[in-house]
Length: 389
Ligand code: SAH
Ligand code: SF4
Image (cartoon, rainbow, N blue to C red; front, side, top):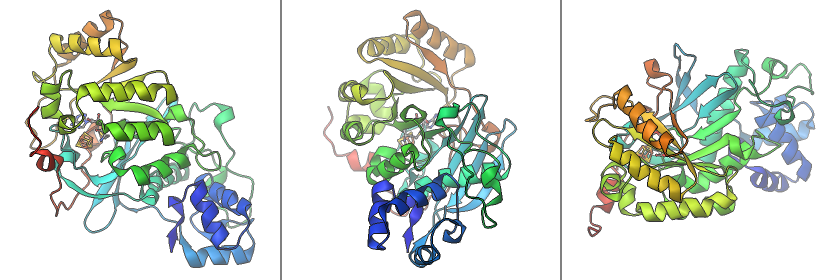
């Protein structure tokens, strides 16, 4: 059985060719799946009965099973999904006045072991499949539509009508509204560029006019800095890029973001510069987690200014979100403001990320899911033998 949610346009074309169906069927089914959120071939009322039967016999349509669905006081909503073998992942919906953003996971756990990240703490279990990645968006849109939430602030020209086919078998929510999720950020559990082969088809579906139809600037991928993969992304599927910087020099970044020992800052910044001509925006977003007395001194900010002179960027300061067992503290508010001021005075656009969904542990870096780290694959272990630079 083929999981249909995991097939991008090219994959669906191949799938329907193998079934002996006409190519336009692929696009038709793509719209049923990703715009009307059909969960069974029998709902696809404008397909011939024999096609529906063939589909039912060869394919499945399903997101990972929901273990828990929690809504925070500020409207942030978090789904915990079962991805089998004792592993769970999370997705977070963040409603704002002018958009609805879904933060999507790419791996069960993460091998990169950043010092301040609860996902990293758990180690790595496995890559999510494309169907599991896309399934998060599919499920969230469906669940929100079922609750009567519709798209906010998305320009009319970017919206595709969801209704149109009618019929008794059509899901009731289809005609109620439009896909409520207008932005996707690959900022959940895992390092998306370490699961490149499954993430890129998912990105393609997010962008595809016959699927979610989001513009490239509404899809953001966040990476801790897998340099060769940044170049591949530029060639294969450039979307808005966020880079987890977190330190202004190699000494500190080596400790906070261990992948830096393999791809140091100079290489990372050069990769950002190579990416920009392909990017949908003319800047890279640098994420910078504010850790009390670790990376929040004014001189750190001044070093960041030097980096910003090199790479067109916006800085996003993320107050550290604590989790049980962490040795770090959040920088005090005044210190974050002072840090921001140094950057702003130098003309660097710098925002402080608003913490959302704190009361349900849905904030950045708090996503825990549950990972059976039987293999204890952690980057720190794997790169330890590298010679000191
Ligand atoms: N693996 C990717 C994307 C997932 S993490 C990456 O590292 O970029 C999304 C963002 O949350 C990253 O910038 C990450 O460094 C940050 N983050 C991780 N743990 C955090 C924590 N405890 N508090 C605040 N931000 C955190
Ligand atoms: Fe992995 Fe990103 Fe967490 Fe680092 S911050 S451990 S790359 S999920």
